[in-house]
Image (tube, rainbow, N blue to C red; front, side):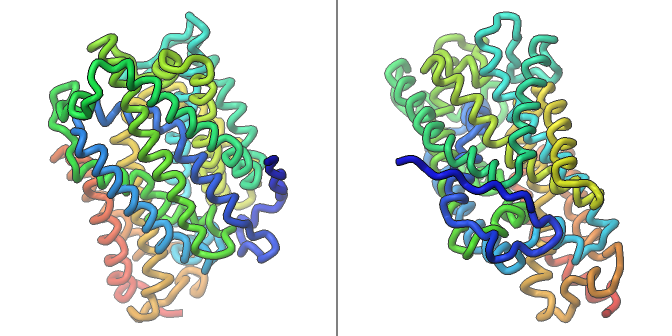
Length: 452
């Protein structure tokens, strides 16, 4: 059946509540989440589970439990807040934290989202570059651009992805909705085609529990926490207020399940199988670049899937980053903010380091950004019970909430100290940092903030 096109809205309601007439039905969200999370990161993360030494039980059981926790967080924490407020993350934070402090957060948020989108530009470029022998593909250890031909491919892809993001949320959702079913089928096809080619179908021989570089395996708990918290900035960190504010009711938060179980379960496992085949064929010289891996399994259709997979993750991420930059400079139009975000994402895409170290990068950016979501939760549901003023900056006319700054910076600084000195996997610290931030905000607000 032909799907009618979604209307493209010219007004994105960046600094006001989304009105009832602009609310969207469930199909927009199921397609958006399926497309965004059955996407480019999956081609990178599946192989990394093998490279980091996850066992078969870790992958199959850990991903199941972790993804259930992620969906529940979206449904019962993020979606109810989004439909209560109907504001972007950045607009709500300004009401709580004040203009100057929010500008700092928005800048950090926008830059980190650009780096993530850049990793997806890298993923798409590995597919576009396959037909051209002059394009040198990046590998695990590569951090810098691999050559001029590589740069040309990345720049072209980044420009096209930015064009889609500039069109606005409705157009981004439409692209994801159309691409998601086909991409999921391609991931499954990759897995089914790869299985007969593997020397052993025993999961223990695929996910051996032994890291390629000799480091300890990531383990069951690490897989659970990573699956739950790899998108912590979106759900615990409330970035998806900007998306789910268009939802008619909180139940639309279940749409995250389309991405978690199609993308962060089935697609991750299929991507692991692709890399297992590469290891079987090439040993230590095996490449984890998505384009070559998929092309060797399913040919040209696979390359198209990799391009779209990177595309459907980069588009909403660039859209979010553009909103963040608009929060830094309110006079900036959403289109201009998105163009800046797209340019930065394209530059980041030139450097393979963001894609090749994705497990660590995703954990770091989630742990840095997610704690601010705890401040929003505390302000919306706990402030009056704790005897503090909701939307403190808006009610007092202040431009800087010192309690919010300290509540965010102190736990994050502790995280970086532990990460650098104890080499702790970042996802282990996300929830403790989030809880510490929320608790500190309530406590510090009582002592540091004046009542209006």
